[in-house]
Image (cartoon, rainbow over all chains, first blue to last red; front, side, top):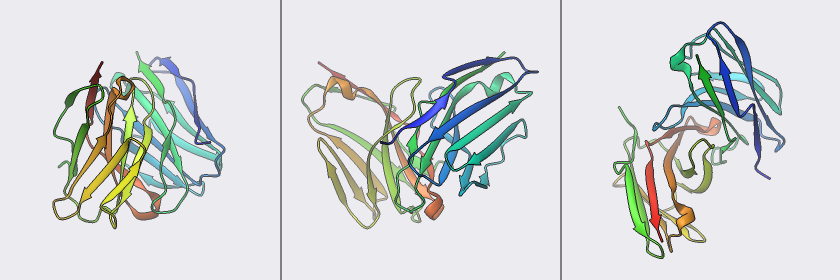
Length: 113
Length: 113
């Protein structure tokens, strides 16, 4: 089983709202990722968690706040977003070997009004 | 500067024929390459990968070839089926065991019945 579960599938929020995206996997993967994908563009890495610790933040604005409460869960907290933050947000996970494959969830389609 | 390039934004192939998708990279430190298939509004689905110590990997209808001296890889799909119609992303692994991926811009494959 290589399932990564993301909720919600769609989210519409105003610029003053606070919302959270959730990601869950039960494959025992200890590396988890958040990506952002705009239309007709490739996924771009935002954050990497390794063994529940944030190891990479790709210069993401502070209005995006990741959290890894345990080895199966990854959250992305959103606050004071801008319309240009509208995108597909993808979660991925992998084991921690160099040649292990990242498996992606279906994504959350976020629209900021 | 793009480190992973897919120079063909689209490719159209007749059902039953071979589809060849190409990818070039610039960083000789990349040690692992992956191909993902993506439908609109869904997460990327892993297809096949290849380590830099190999020049070929085959899985059913999918074969990936790696030419390290030319910094070039290709994905062959034989025979192509209409269900293969999707966007195909080439990705290169950097960052060692954390497995951070750099994606190409994707090639949209259309397989016509």
